Structure formats: structure tokens, C-alpha cells
Length: 362
Picture 1 (cartoon, rainbow, N blue to C red):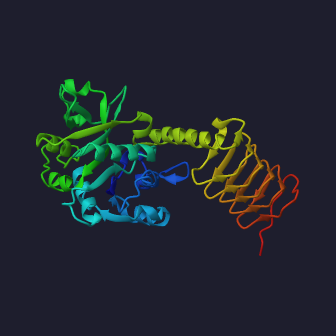
Picture 2 (cartoon, rainbow, N blue to C red):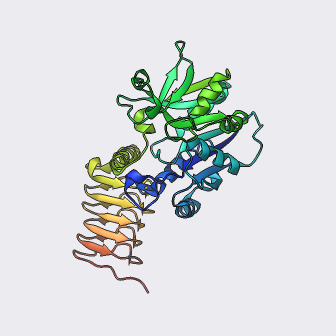
Picture 3 (cartoon, helix red, strand yellow):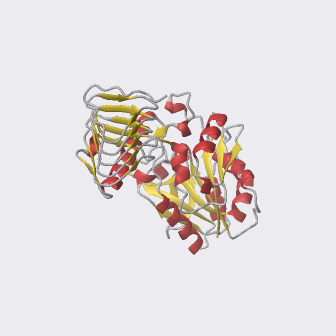
């Protein structure tokens, strides 16, 4: 089974009120678009086309630097913002290969869904292939579906179409099952369906959602897999960014707690997804671990400690300390109130005492 992916990351994200492209806003130490790329890990796509637009150069540079090699990332630029259908067409052009390969699956997903999990995408594609669907959507049932396209079904449960909120009737607005903008398509059907899109809607844009109605109208099977709203919600403003950060931080802390790390108060512990921790570590409240920080077994961290890109050995004690691009050896005791500037190294077994500023090695 051949799988390729298209990530739609061209939008300006005006509600973020930022000069930074929306896909590059960070959650738990990683830009949103890179969280989406990592969610493809189980699928191991042949190619991942990232469609860029606003801030294209910045997004391309960051993704090229940080994307995992297995994602096989390529880029396509959507020069004019003509809607999600146009963005998908742009991405298809970057995938290479044959659009008439009916064994191939194309997964399309937005670049602002950082909470999506690899297991969910794996289930989406497995369901799609097992049922020989033309398209399979990831949907969620939301108590308040405001802002989302509604999934319209026939009386027998068949998916008929998706209607965007601004184009929906009063009856359709009452539907609580929503489109998450995450799909699996048969590649040989997706290309022609995209070419048949039109701009007959309130926005005058090419809607990717209209592909569903087009395929269903031709008698093709449309499937759906439901996922929890907490996983599929997008990020459109700073409030939603903060909510996504809280959810992902809870997941990250839970994973470490189940793998032998003690946290006296997980709600006051902040660990980036890029951090590596050993076992039998104790983390006290107010600790923040960022970037490529690595901590050995048996170490105590905190309270009120912030480390960025630091290497900490085993059985160390680090309290009330701020460090960046520094190293702490096995069994060292650092702090309280220590400062470790870039390049500093505390050798194994050292006891720094309070109010310590580490010298930087020549």
C-alpha cells in the first residue's frame, strides 16, 4: 500500500495577530506544523508535500531543518490563497508519481492540528483501505460546532456532503458532527475531483470539502472515522494555542509519569516534547525543561529550575537553577540560585553552593 501526505500550511493566520507564520507557532517546544508531520510516523509516507504560502521561506527553512528523515518532505507554494481545494491541488503537483494509481492513498491534513496522534491517522488509513473507500474523513462530534463544516448524512447514515458554516442552512447548523479537514483519498479519484471544483460559494474559493459531495454524487463510497474533539481541534488564535499547549503538556507529563519519572505537581511542570528523561528522576514544581535537554537516571530537578538544551548526568541535584546549552556531570549538586551560561560545564561530583555562576570553558 502506497501512502503520501499533503499538509496545508499556507494560511496567514491573521487571528494569531503575529508576524510569525501560523504553522511555526510553538506548542511544547515544537512548531505546530512539525507536530502534524510527526503524527504521520506510523504511515511512513513515500512523500509529504507541505503546501506553504504566507511566510513560505520561513516555514520551508524550519521544516527542512527539523523534519524527520522518514517523512520525505517536499514543498509546494500556493502563490494565491484560493482556498483549500486549490491548496490540495498545489500539493498534488509536488507528490510526483502517477495520479492514476488506484492502490495509492493520499492523506490530506491541516498544518494547525498539533494534537493529532499517529494512532488516529493509522486507523483512518486502515479503515479507508479495508473498506475500499473513495474517501474517508476524520470527524468529531462537538457540543459547540461553531466555525466547523458540518457532516451531512443520508437517512441510512451515508455521508452525502460537507457544508461550511457560512453556507449552511439553519437545520444544517444544528448538526454536531463536524469535518476536521483530515482525509484519506484514493489518489486516482482525488485528482479528477479537484479539477472539477468550482467557486460557487460565499467565499468564492475552491473548497476541498466539495470533493466529498462530488465523489458521493458519483456513487463512490465515503467513509468516516470519529476522533475526540480534544485531538482534532485546530489552532486559530492565541487562546486556542494556549489550550492546545495545556492538552499536549498533560499528555507529555502523563507519558513520563508512566515511565518512571516523579512529579510533585504535574500542573506546575513544563516539559517540551523534545526532552529526554531517564528513570527515577524527581521533578519539583516550577521546573521547565526545553529543547534538547537530556537528564540521567536518579536526578532531582527543581524547584524553580529552567534548563534549555542542557545535558544533566545521573544522580545529580539541580535546584533554583537557570541554564542554557550547558552540562552538569554525574552526582553534581548545583544551586540553589545558580546560573549556567552557554558553554558552562559543571564536572561530576561538584557541589557549587548557592548563588553560583558557572565559568565558561575556553
